[in-house]
Structures are given as structure tokens and as C-alpha cells.
Image (spheres, rainbow, N blue to C red):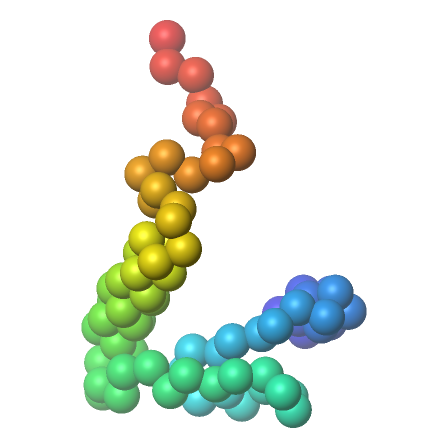
Length: 78
């Protein structure tokens, strides 16, 4: 994960961590996420919340999440 993270940081991207944020550095946002004992269930709950956040962001900024710009079908159905 370290090489990938270094690459992202080189690009000066805004980084948001979901979870404990143990790999975060100054200026990176940490969202604690769900705190369940079952890590698998926590991951599912977090993904639902993130999808809802993405939907809300898209709609409030005038994007159509069902037909994103520039995205085409990768595989062809015969």
C-alpha cells in the first residue's frame, strides 16, 4: 500500500481516510467510520454511507449519477 499512497500524495490529491487513519499525515481528513466489533459488517455499513454521500454530492452539483459524463461501457455484449 505504501508505494500507491506515495504516488497519490505526489499528485497533491486531497486524501480522505475512512477508519482509524493510522496512515494519515497532516492535512488529510480522517472520517472515523462505523465502530462495530464485526469489521466485515462495518465495511458494508461504511460503503452504504459513502455511496449515499456520493449520490447526494452528484445530485446537488447537477450531475446525473445514472448517466455519468465520459463513462462508456467497457465490455460489449454480443
